[in-house]
Amino acid sequence: MTETIRLLARYNAHVNAEMNGVLAALAPEEWTKERGGFYPSFHKLAAHLYTADLAWLVRFGGFRPFKSLKGDPFDFPPSPGEAPFTAFDDYAAKRKFLDAAFVSFAAELTDADLAADVSYRNFRGEALTKRFGSLVLHTFNHQTHHRGMIALYLDQMGVKNDFSNLSAIA
Image (cartoon, rainbow, N blue to C red):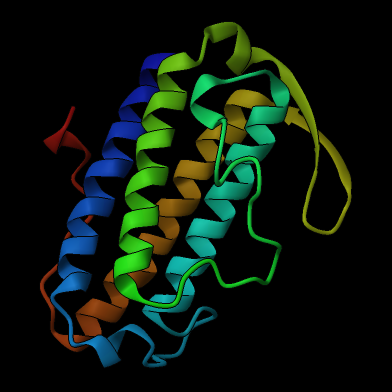
């Protein structure tokens, strides 16, 4: 399973970079324009993805010491509800850093890590215990889901996009 996680981490970084290239080409006002949906703008979707990914990586770092999950922003993540960025360029830099952290984190994982159970608290403070590998897979599935929302917004704008080609890096 470690190879699958490593593949997903590389894929995630690859398609996020592609997606951010498309988003960077949009007019600045498109970043915050509301389009419907639960996260109604590119900015709000990106903030949710970044914050959720960072929260999961911080939780994963509590399982055992991972070299890739040390320092800022892992030691001092933003508070829930705190905007981690406002401008697209700031988001793109933070996303690139986080994607590199995912790739490094995946390289440190062992089969024993992925088979272990981990206890953590969710955002509501509920204590949960889940299989570590399932939670890691969840983070990648969560990103895929929300990249689909971004793709839909781009489709509605008539902007060409395709962030689903796992075989491009396999």
